[in-house]
Length: 56
View 1 (tube, one colour):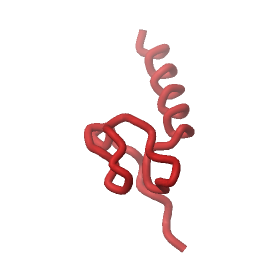
View 2 (tube, rainbow, N blue to C red):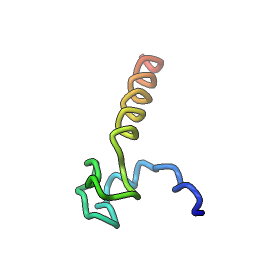
View 3 (tube, rainbow, N blue to C red):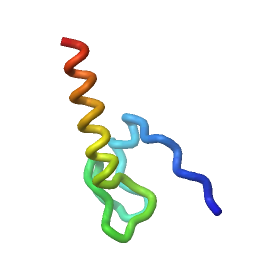
C-alpha cells in the first residue's frame, strides 16, 4: 500500500499536474489520482474564508 500524498503547498499551484498535465490551480482530470480534487478545492475555499474572516 502506498502512503498518502504530501500536503499541498502554495507553490504547488504554480505548476501543472505532473500526472495529467492539468493547468495550475485547476482540478485534475477525472482519471488522475495524484492531483487537486474538488474536495481539495472546497477545503481550500473554506480555509481562505476562515482566514479572511479572522484577519479583518
